Length: 160
Image (tube, rainbow, N blue to C red; front, side, top):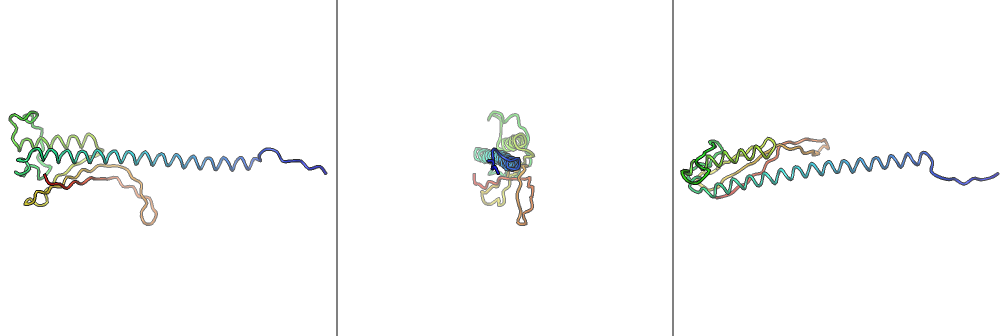
């Protein structure tokens, strides 16, 4: 009886190798997708932090306006053409223009962006600026179920 040596790969070995390769490539594609989403969410968070800081700086620049209570809420913001330059713009007008311009920035740079300003204790000089927006994050809860959350926010507590 003559024994022959085995040569090459069998079809089963090739198919197993293809399945392993396909699963690996699918894992790499999933990691890339998650990485892109996390990068987008981080970018939106950076923009929100910038916008919250922007309003804080506007309030610091208008000391008479925040002391008079013109920034206590985000309501009352309106475009004031006389506040494009400093001539003819009083602190209340500047506060209204700042709030209007800030809201325009939030709405144009963040998806479903909203901004709020509050002064929890008028006796103290504490303000709370909140910027919120819509994003998509896929999380696992305690039971292992996938949960989509779609609202994020940045809260800035400060004293002008």
